[in-house]
Length: 440
Picture 1 (cartoon, rainbow, N blue to C red):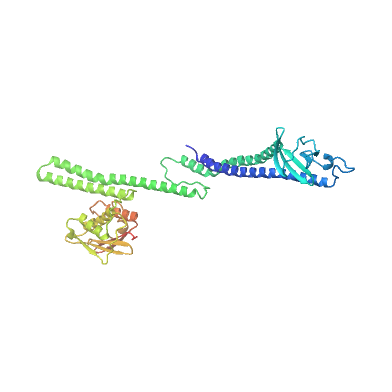
Picture 2 (tube, rainbow, N blue to C red; picture 1 turned 90 degrees about the vertical axis):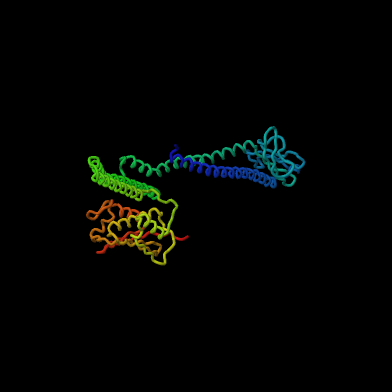
């Protein structure tokens, strides 16, 4: 697998190479054109200089005239130069000039092939004379290549230096990641403490924070598993022991005593089953498992379904609905809303005397549905209210698993609701508020 450093180096290096090559080719092409233009300007300037010198000398053929010579005309030896009459007579040339005429038919620049050599010439007509300056094309090409090579070497050196600095810079920039990797390697396999790495850049700090949040969630998951294991071992031991004892008594007895022992064993099995269901529901609510099955319900529907699930005799629970009541769906899945209400109602029925109804009041306001469950039991002392949502906490010798209100509290925390308790001498009022789904 390719390392991040190699990937970044290849990506950025390729961009560097493309940009530098594009700029270099553009620069070299422009330099070549300017150099060729400068050489052409040199031919033009030399021809005009010779023309100026000819204007100061007597033309051949007049009395007392001396023949024209390259030295008098100031013709430089680094280029070929010829002076011809309009009739084609050669009047002067330097040693670099070939014996054949360099002059073209028209004035200006022209390219000619003489004795197998390519020439670049410029012809200037001054009076009755034709002045021609020329360079060998091979010499021009050699000069061009030398200049281009001299100009390209710094570009190539700069490109290689940039790639080297890029490799070192990427390695330096990735050093904090290496420190994080080394810190993770040094941790124990069971360590869930937050990771601390000093000197991280701002771009990597969110990664470290996310990593620490993951460790925190793992720690919470492990703690829930430990608590579930400990709670199950503690709470299931007594019912299992009681069931085993009753079955042993039933095996050794006959008649009514045997039937009574079997009935007690069945009650213990029911209690054990209910405790297991509550433990599993609590573990699912506190965990990350999803309850969203696509089924939504209104607050009134949730209240009536919870009443139906709690007791067959619905007369034991009196439902009071405040008007007007919103018809918006609850924000939380219906199974959680019904489970929370069912646990509240079961707890209230457990502490309400027979022939007395539990009151369930429902109202909606400010985007929330509030369910108020009121029993008519002995109430709860003020100092015990803080313990109501603790696992397996029971007041006195109360029956039940002690998980109902803990499950309701877990649902409230998961769904951003609220749970409040108000104890009176003639009973306990529990108010559960759940958010309503916002209208689009």
